[in-house]
Amino acid sequence: MRLAMEASPLLLLLSLTLLLATFLQAKAVPSLQEQAGALLAWKATLQSHPAQLHSWSRGNNTSTWPCSWYGIECSKHQASHQEVITKISLRGLRLRGELDALNFTALATMTSIQLSHNRLTGRIPPGIVSLRDLRFLLLQRNQIRGPLSPALASLKKLRCLMLQQNELSGEIPRQIGELGNLVTLNLSANHLFGPIPGELGYLKKLVRLDFTCNNLTGSIPRNLGNLTKLTILYLDVNQLSRHLPSELGYLVNLRELSIGINKLTGSIPHTFGSLINLVLLYLSDNELSGCIPQGLGYLVNLKMMDLSSNNFIGSIPSTFGSLINLTQLYLWNNTLSSCIPQELGYLVNLEDLDLSYNKLMCSIPNTFRSLINLTGFRVSDNHLMGPIPNIFGFLTKLTMLYLDDNQFSGHVPREIGTLKDLQNLQFDGNNLSGPLPPGLCSGGRLKHFTAYDNNLIGPLPSSLVHCKSLVRVRLERNEIKGDISELGVHPNLLYMDMSSNKLFGQLSSH
Image 1 (cartoon, one colour):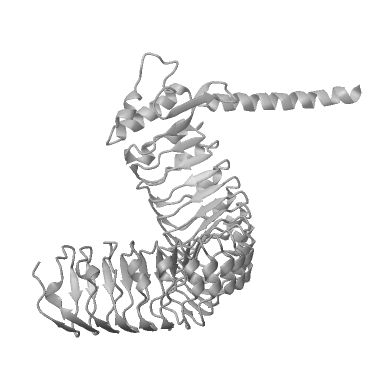
Image 2: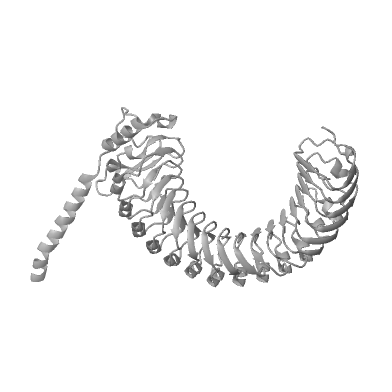
């Protein structure tokens, strides 16, 4: 009993304190009239007033405005139980004006701001830090400039911060790492520079991180390996350097990893073989070296892999034959050698394959006849040899076939002339002989055809002579003969070189 009596004053004090806090919080909540005034004041500063904003006016029914205005949502405040503005959504209205002309202090009850795809300028105003309940801040595709304020870290409930495609500059504040509820962070296509803060590794709820197209420098923080919920990581088109951290291999939920067009060095970590949910892997245009890890062949969900324009050596891993969902494979402009593995012929969903500008040897595997969905096949500038295999008749969807600058010999297979959708055909710079195959351009779509620097003979096929889709043709330095005046009308032709052959006659001026 005595204990209860002694405790009661303490309980009374706590109750009074909570009551006072609730009262003060409720009293601090701006009224709807005050919030409406802030919006109308901002509207008055805008240089454009789209039709959707005609509803933004002081009407007779003060009980519903501004909650009935276009793009405005209201709800009852938890403390004051009064109607307050919680959301503003004015996406894509081409609004022109200053963002910092909006009085965010009067709109402190907002949980969502969606002002993307407009033409707003100015800086992110300091008053935005008063929005302690803000969960969504979407300002992408505007012309907002200036640095990111470290004060944004006070928005502890923020889940989505999308500021891409603006004119933001300066460094990424390390205080961003204090936004522990952040799920999406997109700062791409700005003018940000400096390092990626290691503190971002504290954002354990982060699912999407996009810093593409900035001027970020330094290394990729190892702490990013802590973001185990991450599904999308885009860091491409920056100035990032040093090695790829092996810790990125811990991001087992990652679906898209894009770090192309940087200055990364070293090899691909073997831990990347653990990224079993990866659908897209884009590491092109760096200075990566060493052998391509066999473990990448275990990423069976991959649909696109781009390792082009690096310094990779060795052979193409035979394990790539397990990537049965792959639709695009780009390995061009490396120093890959040895034979093309026949296992690549198992990739029946492949649509685009580019192995150009390497040192690949041997011949094209016969298993490639199974790549029936292929639309682009490029092996230019390698050391491939032997006859061109007659597999291409099976690849009926081909629109682009580049076999140039190799050591192919023998006749051009007749099957190439059966490809109705072919638009680009190159096999110049080889040791090919015999006549051109009949049927070239039989589909009426061939635009670019180069076969110079070979030993081709005979007259031009009739289908090529009358091919009206041709734009560019190069057949110089062969043994082709015939009357050049028989060439038909080519309304789209911009360039033709048939010099150093055994042709006679004159080209038509048409």
